[in-house]
Structures are given as C-alpha cells and as structure tokens.
Amino acid sequence: MTNSQLSEAPLLVAARGGTPSRTPVWFMRQAGRSLPEYRKLRAGTAMLDACMDPEMVREITMQPVRRHDVDAAILFSDIVVPLKAAGVDLDIVPGTGPVVANPVRTAEDVAALPELRTEQVQPVLDAIGLLLKELGGVPLIGFAGAPFTLASYLVEGGPSRNHERTKALMHGDPELWHLLLGRIADLTAAFLQAQVAAGVSAVQLFDSWAGALSERDYREFVLPHSTRVLSSISGVPRIHFGVGTGELLPAMREAGADVVGVDWRIPLDVAVRRLREAAPELPVPVVQGNLDPALLFAGVPALEREIGRIVGEGKAAAGHIFNLGHGVLPDTDPEMITKAVELVHAAR
Ligand SMILES: Cc1c2[nH]c(c1CCC(=O)O)Cc1[nH]c(c(CCC(=O)O)c1C)Cc1[nH]c(c(CCC(=O)O)c1C)Cc1[nH]c(c(C)c1CCC(=O)O)C2
Image (tube, rainbow, N blue to C red; front, top):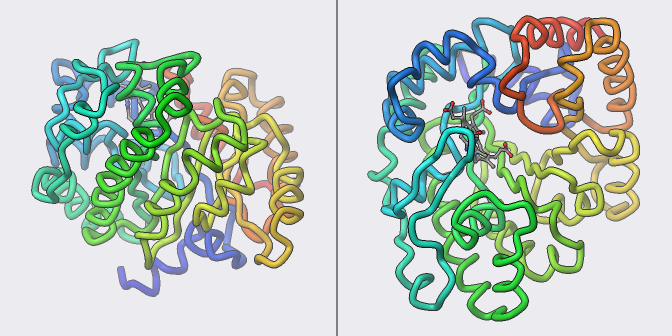
C-alpha cells in the first residue's frame, strides 16, 4: 500500500472535504464487548494489561475490520492508558469504568502528576507498527482523551454523573484548574504526537463529558487546553468528539478540529448550520456521526430509515464520516453493525 493509495481512502477524502468513492463509516467502540471473538480473547486479561500487549491490541483492533467492512480501524486502547503508563495509580473496573486510587484535588496532587515519556507507551506504538503492516488501505485512527474528560476522572476519582467536584475545582480555584488542565494537555499531546509519529492516519480527541458544561465555562476553562492539544498535531486530520455537545460544536471546532463529531441529539444539517453561522469565514465544515447507538436494536427497517435520513442530512456538510453518536452498546448484535455498514455504503 503506497501513501497515495491510503490518502484516497474514503475516510481521509471525506475528512479533507473531498468526494469519497463511498460514504465512509466506522463505529466508536467497534472493537469490544459486542464481539464474541473479543470476549473470548480478552477472557482472563485485565483491560489495561490488554492495552499494553501489542499482539492483543493488533488482533482486537482488526476484529471489527474483518467482520464489518468498516472504512477505518480505531486503535484498541483507552483514554486512561497514557495516565496509567505515566504512573498514575488507576484501574478500569468492569461495569464501572476508570477508577483512580488517589483523586487529584489539591495543589500538591496536581504538582505530583507525572509527565509522559514516549517509551512508557512503547507497547501502544509497537501495536500501531503491527497494524500498519496488516491494514493496507484501511486508515488507522489513533486517539486520546481530552483534558476536561480526563480531569473529570482524575478529580472525581471515577465516573461521575454530575462532575460536581470537577466543577467545584474549576470555579473554586481557577488557577489550580488551569494548572491541572495544562498538565493533562501536555500528556495528551505527547501521547497523540507519538501515535502520529508511529503512523496513524487520523486522530480523534474524545471529550466525552464536555456536554456537561455551559458554552461559557467550556470556552473559559477547557477550550484553551484542547486547542493546545489539537494545535500540536499536524499532518493528519483531527476529529473532535463529545456527547451532548449541540451547544458547544462551534467552540469544539475552534479548538482546531478538522472534523466535528455530532451525537444523535441534533440532526447533521442543523449541526452544519450552527457551525457555518458561527464561522462564515471558514470552509464548510466536515462532520462525523450521528446514529443513535440504540437504533442498532430497532430492526432493519427502522435502521435503514434512520441511516437514509442521516446520509441525506450529512450532505449539508463538506464531508460526512458516518458513525454512531456515541459508542457501540455492549449488548448490540454484531450482525446489526455489519448490516448498518452495508446500508450506509448503499445509501445515496
Ligand atoms: C469515556 C471513555 C472511556 N474510554 C474511552 C472513552 C471515550 C469514548 C466514550 O465516550 O465512550 C475511549 C475508548 N475505550 C475503548 C475504546 C476502543 C476503541 C474503539 O473501538 O472505539 C475507546 C475509543 C475501549 C474500552 N474501554 C473500556 C472497555 C470495556 C472493558 C472490557 O471489555 O472489559 C473497552 C472495550 C473500559 C472503559 N473505559 C471507559 C469507560 C467508561 C469504560 C467502560 C467500563 C465498563 O462499562 O466496563 C472510559
């Protein structure tokens, strides 16, 4: 596979706002618990151990590509992998999510946060090397968690519905907050840059929980740090995604996104209108999304209707990468994922 063949991959053409040979489609969390072959391979291995085993990462990343004919692979990893690799004491607890042993709440805690040295994530970079040999013309997407979403796990100590301790720190001690986000931004930027140097074709910055913030707070407390992360990346398209971010889309684009992720709460043509009105001087935006993950449970006729609608509304953008509005739910029937890919590729 030459670079020029890869650069014509539908995902990368759409990300540049060009006209791809077919609507590119991949799914957040396409690798994971919906696949029996994943559950079999992972049995007996802790999530974070699996993420540091290059051969396992290679195999798990490939599973959905083989099965579903998706237009991209996403590196099998997790947003907390660079924190763990740098030395933060945390684990991923099945059914719960990331749990941090010593939550970060004081100036001392922030000062004690380690930096990331590239060799600490060498197994991830080795996995990328193995994948590039196997993927051929299918682009590999690297990713990282955005400063706000990672800060929420670090400050709360685990998953949080209301992010109250995080917001308390943000508003109660803005100086310390910015120090914390700056530290995380350094770590995230280092992790993404290492993935790009190892050869990924695109990166996605997951700010999954940014939708918990008002636009005002997002702009003041988060945007500068996400901007620093995204502006440190060049040479590959940058996708910026969050959940419940209908009000934040223009700000998330401003952070330096080439592709703006849209969950299922607003239609893509509305998202494109908001982005265009906020920045008429910029090119027409490129978007990713926005099928509700629950639609994969609704049967083929409903799925076909929704996919047709979304592909139609996506034409308002300069480019559309089809995806879910959030990750594949663990109980999803993998046959429905394969079917969805077929339907996207057939939709006009
Ligand atoms: C918030 C977040 C996390 N991790 C991630 C995010 C951002 C994306 C999002 O908003 O969903 C990112 C992530 N985590 C994982 C991927 C894999 C790549 C992909 O296929 O998309 C990606 C992109 C694998 C994983 N990450 C995790 C699993 C499940 C672990 C397992 O299989 O045992 C997988 C496949 C664990 C994890 N890690 C996290 C959660 C909430 C969980 C689920 C915990 C549970 O319910 O058991 C934190």
